[in-house]
Length: 221
Ligand SMILES: Cc1cc2nc3c(=O)[nH]c(=O)nc-3n(C[C@H](O)[C@H](O)[C@H](O)COP(=O)(O)OP(=O)(O)OC[C@H]3O[C@@H](n4cnc5c(N)ncnc54)[C@H](O)[C@@H]3O)c2cc1C
Image (cartoon, rainbow, N blue to C red; front, side):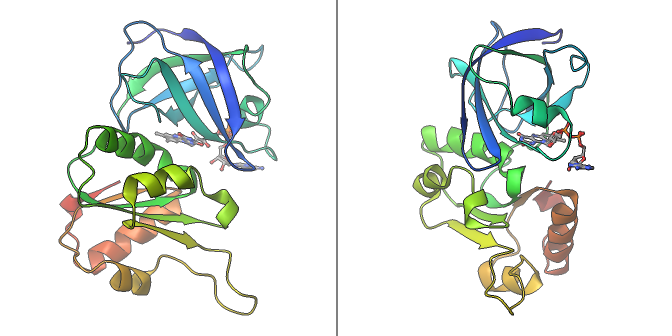
């Protein structure tokens, strides 16, 4: 599956103040697995060769493709342009490539928009009745940054914890996923771990996990 596809945007909506959901048509014979991503470009003069990676949050057997994209409005990049596109406009899509693959039950740690590959994985597990021994720790700056809170709660039940790093009471330290938090929250470091988010998030968390006894081969980033 290569070549450039021109895809019509069927629907858009803001899920949070800066995260936008795009529903786009699915090309014939296109297939992907949960956790995989593609490159998108804006179909406007000057932007057609500005490719950026985004994860499929839909499942392959759905009739359409869904992307959930954080829009960086302060910066004149591709996502700012995507922020202006709505139903009826087109975007360009090429290739499918792997990022995070589900390798079995484990604890998922996501920072911000790093939740997107996990959304596809959780949906696949949930719809096939295989959501067992899967937990999520989802870190965001504030409550209002959380993407698809209701759906995640429905899929994961009480195996879902939120952390808000900038929501501390004035005068108190920000809450972060640090060593102490992991010791208190995760009892079994023999588990499998999936980590996705900004580079610093991934580096810090994988560092703590290995210090606490997780095997490098059990940490999927
Ligand atoms: C495999 C993969 C899958 C991804 N999937 C998703 C997804 O599903 N959803 C999603 O939202 N994101 C996803 N991302 C991240 C996404 O690709 C980037 O957010 C996007 O490429 C940013 O494009 P841009 O042109 O708007 O910014 P760019 O111009 O490419 O900016 C590059 C970097 O500059 C930073 N930047 C932002 N503002 C400024 C500024 N004012 N000045 C200087 N630098 C700034 C950005 O943080 C970014 O890291 C994924 C990334 C990868 C690698």
